[in-house]
Length: 300
Image (cartoon, rainbow, N blue to C red; front, side):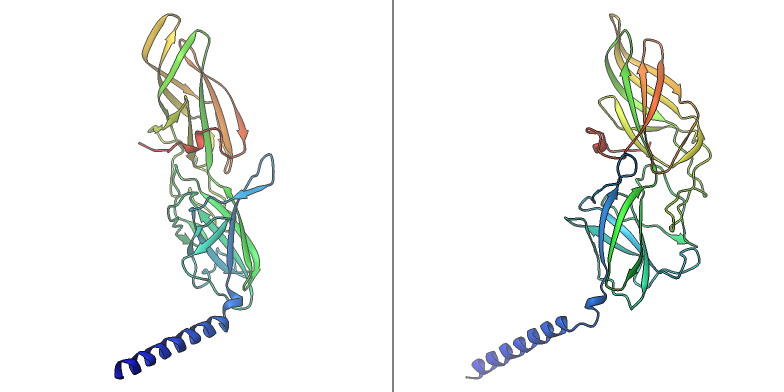
């Protein structure tokens, strides 16, 4: 009888606990103050449309009172926070963000992948940035407590697509390596959180970086730079007339130009019998192009 009595007592306690838990969740005074986050990509060249954010991407989110400027204020308690993108473009933070009555400005950074972004701020400005990272930035302003934050992320670095084509008298072109001189990352190549602007580099690194390539083409993500003459080095096997050449080295300098933040440049080169010729560049939307988006970029 004692065991049966103890069993009934345990069941009664469990039932009361469940009832209290349910009642607490229903009557939470913070439920209507939870901020919801959503993410998409903003296309900025040929269209103004958006596409869903990639599932699994992570983002760092900062919140400020709408009356405060990030340059002279601390972010709201509980931020920055890290959120992960789920299906449907929803960003799920590690823990809910509840805010008191008011209006808030939100800013977000992502590396466009599943790694955890970490932007350390000083007076609203980041630490020095690096080549090889696809920095995304977005903002959403004047959001009330309990509101929905819609982040439309834009690319803030520069994307290069390098394409090598066969010239007259050249056949069976197989690129072995592609190297370029990237922008020099310095203490001044930083991002302003309020605008998402990255300060352009003013010089090139003397050391070339190797790019992974696919079908005689490669992508590279780099910092914006002004007045740059990129140097390109390509090694390839090819057939010139009737002669098979196992390893031919080309070097060429791209004419001076600015490479602007958030822009995708396609550079096209022709591999001839004696030289690699730069034939021009175009600007395109920063979207998936054939299989090139799948390339893993590395620096050596």
